[in-house]
Length: 219
Image (cartoon, rainbow, N blue to C red; front, side):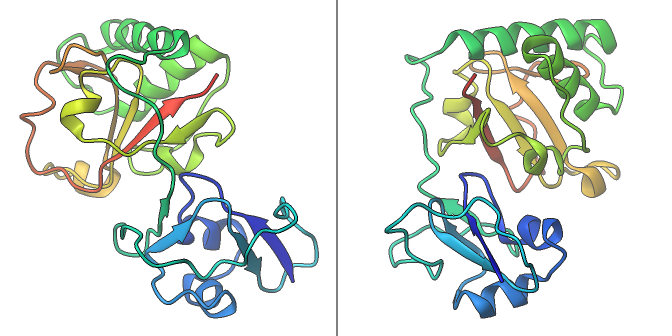
């Protein structure tokens, strides 16, 4: 049995898929009462694995959680303690760079009209800004963002839209394809719009979306 140190943005379901096991097996081996709640920095025991994956530092405690955390979406296992310093008044050069690359990607693809390729637009912007590509559709890209280059932050959509260069992901939207593939976009910082394969003028007014996660670049 190996160990894995939980990172901000990890979910139990994604880790179960990554290590070819199940959420219930991870919860059972780590005595996790609520599979929807795991904690960054804790050690997770991986059943059936012979190697170790990023073992925790000395003094770390094994994953079982502690009281007072905030639950995530069903089966998702939101990581507690993943909040960051992103805010309208604390914008890094990397965030500005990503916002600019996102707008350029959107203008080069659909302009102000969606092409149904939101993840392609976001991945293109990340590649143009930072030199690497992130795979997956709208509701997968959050699990594929490198955790040493992005971290999940805890803030409202309204606040995020005032902050440029954040990656937004939704598990589901109200459209037929969105209910399957979700949606992802990058904030522009104007308090209203976001960009992906097109420029969405009023992201805050877009209804029927659920499972929002927000990520800040660390580069």
